[in-house]
Image 1: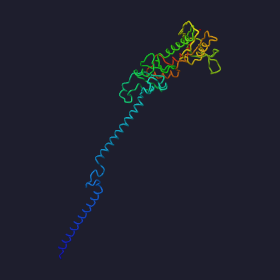
Image 2 (image 1 turned 45 degrees about the horizontal axis):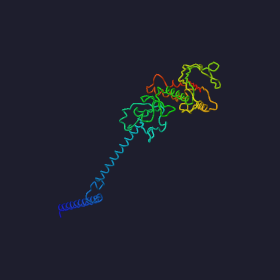
Image 3 (image 1 turned 45 degrees about the vertical axis):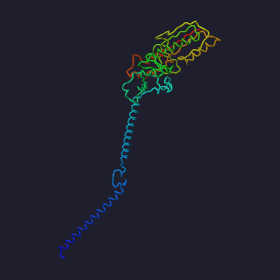
Image 4 (image 1 turned 180 degrees about the vertical axis):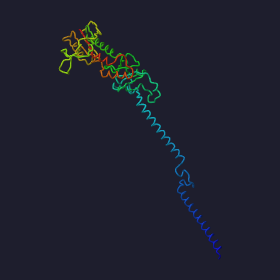
Length: 350
């Protein structure tokens, strides 16, 4: 056999072997594909689809709903966070914060509201805030003092009494009547009038023939002197110290003087401003004891003891008023100091 013939035979054998390899490779590939298809085709439809991987329409809708719910929850959390921030910043006050739920005209306790209240007009900027819906006012902090700001139209519904009327200004609580608030401008005049009226009712109830109420305001003293007239240089608790002008007065005012027919059937008077004054209580007991009837009595009271406001409190309120640019021509501190220099003398005869 010639070499040419041998070459032809070898080429044919090589081609045949190559074809066999291709066939075997295809068979192997088909086998692998079949195995993969069989493993992946979970629903047995002979095809690999999204359902074979659990990606069904229902699953997609479920995932979409979860995403939607998650977005809603995130939105709610953001909204809650914003409302909490608004609540901390705007500090709204509602009726239930001040009054008993079952009786909106009865206060829970005076500790729930401060002694100082400011009546204000409604703030339109707060109207569009969700946390302020239904509010009757709001809290503000000025120089460390907590101020309750009540809307003018809401104040009358709280069971509180504002004297002489409700208007946009500051009010301070009557120390003897927790539901009564008095305008700062007339606070001390109001207390003065009520004290005089109560002393008049005491005289009438006890059957007095006459009484007189006198206010004596001591002069202001800049330099104090000791009893011997010398200047007080060193502190000495045993030394008697008196004001240089202790017997000099800037003002003497007879606030009330009345004559009665008198009677011998005394009644116990209702006390408010002198409820804790031992001298008045003693007077009532002495008058009720007819075994040795009392004929007359003189009393002297320091007005500051019934003013209901200390110098420290007055100074703090003055600071608030200045900060809010509401300060007038006088100060509460000066009024409290004047009360401290003023004596109330009460003379009663039976």
